[in-house]
Length: 316
View 1: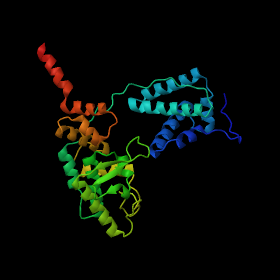
View 2: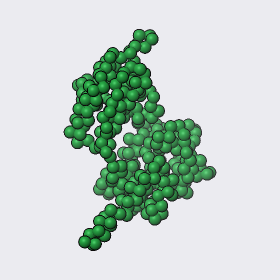
View 3: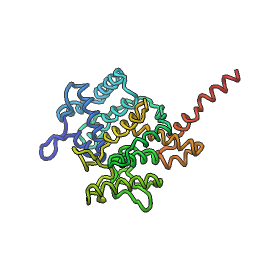
View 4: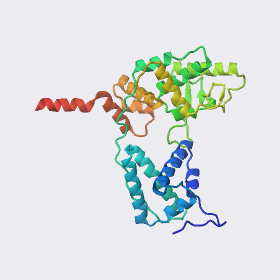
């Protein structure tokens, strides 16, 4: 079955329609990458409208056979289960979008791999985070920015995408709070309370930024911006935040690779420790949609499985 034709005689670009329906640029980038990999693997060519047409014209058996072959190839590469599932989900989304547009009758029934979420929730120690904070030179603009950002990652367990999206207007200095756009929340922002130290650090960063470039700190400007000569004033990207965290960890002498998400792990684990495993209270910090996710953190924290195994061993 060939792809349907629009009234104007144009061929439907299903990939473009699918990407246009995604609000997050990160999501669009991931779909674009995963679909490119699928078509490159299965056809040796890019995901052009013509190649997509060829795939969507397959019958149900042929389509599922192609996706099963692709899944087998992904597993052969040794990719993690979550990565395999994400790429299969991209293909399913493409097919579902095409069905909504009425340009295919294909259905994909191939199941993903079973995944144990957050198997490794270990972060870094509080001393390591303290050492990273201590490497920030608070006499410089960059140091003030980095200190505020690192405090935010640690004190509020924010994701780097959440930090990158922040605008100056999202910061309420008087009430000591931030309006953040959380993961999977669409356009709905939520307020999170800040510690005195973090609020003061953000204020110090914004004041120094305004002194250096009067009039630059407006409500619609990014809260965290680049300060290097090449891209000064540009919104600090998620990649930039990752590199910032990695560099401070190296400067602090931390041997393992430290990412913003590992700091988030560290913050959540430390919060569970100081609250004696109060997953409901810590869920307000982590903003996980399911409390079950935090139970994995908590189980890892107290090594529950190992204790139970030792008790059983003593019985025999």
